[in-house]
Image (cartoon, rainbow, N blue to C red; front, side, top):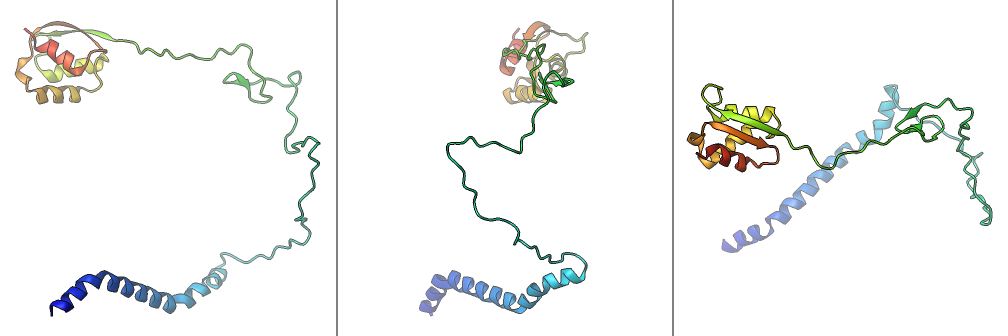
Length: 186
């Protein structure tokens, strides 16, 4: 009995694979006629029709090219000359003839982002008595990205009860932890 169990355990994946192949083969053999009749079915439905194309008049022999001669691309058409083109410039180039716009100045990006500053006043009178309202003000003034992430960091640091009243000068270069540290100092 143990030998039979060991045999089944050792070869069950092979047996299952063979059974799958046999079943797939039987299904294909059973439905092969339907697969071969499908083009006729489409034609009867008014769909795809077979078209006979005559290729007898097409020269399939490669053309001999002299290596010493320049090859001319006949698909390109001549661009209108600048004298006859009514220039329409877009992005510094004429859309019709490709001539560069002599008055175009390419925009330059400032590689250093602007640092935003904000003075936050934490007091009961100003309505900023909790971290959520402070976070919203900081987000609105571009000091932090998201107030929800700011408040989540306060909770993670377990300093919810440590917000101190006062006036704080903050800027967008400060990290979230730097801002929190500043707001919890007495």
